[in-house]
Length: 351
Image (cartoon, rainbow, N blue to C red; front, side):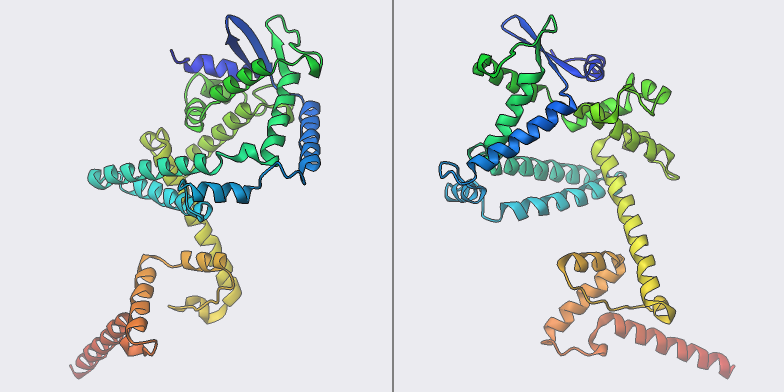
């Protein structure tokens, strides 16, 4: 039976986990900053000692193994980045198609498929991480943290010395901790619903009564998501409750708003740079030195500008790279409109 939101919330507030194995209860507390520092030092030391050990394989070799077994392609990393951008675009489309049910339904289905494919690829890509030095160092680091934060139900340390560690129990504890980790959607739900919202409204500045560096990961996430929803409620065009309560719709709204702000900021910076009459020009040509510059410049085009650009590129290709102004559809339309206007002015003068 799944735990209620109240039970999950109070577990987060307590800053510890209670894990029951074979009828015995164990308490896992949040590691102190001292333990975290020591764990990081251990991680670096394990990495240093094993760096040149030939028994460990590299991340590059892991990828080669996955590719040779047909589990993924060599460009899996770049494909996952493209998927991330695709997911963002789909979320925006989901939000903008809210009142067109057919398109909305198809977009949601596509989004779910792409997101599942991304999760599957992520799992495959990192399935051999434990065979690398970094993967081994991470495991040792996590085991050290559990060793120092595992207590029995009487609040006594389970192990006082490294030599006392029961490896099988440690692995079971580690597995259960991972299983109990709350997914992002659940943390977002908790942050925007009762009873947390009432606690948050009463005391936002230090709701957990502890220094920020002593917060657990879940506590930090709860605060950050709460602030995110606060900002949305304070927005001049705050989305509806339907949007706020749906992660994908809300993400789509936020992405769209962020893109608007970025575009306004870039346009403002561009106006400052080019200045004068050029800032009022219909067209401004900018040279992109990097792929990132190209993407930023492309983002300045509105829908009409993007269509005109695509039409002109098609015309240039058709003309073998020798197109002139009169070959472009948009320029012919402009010239025709100018001719029509001149004709109308002539007729008016004649009257």
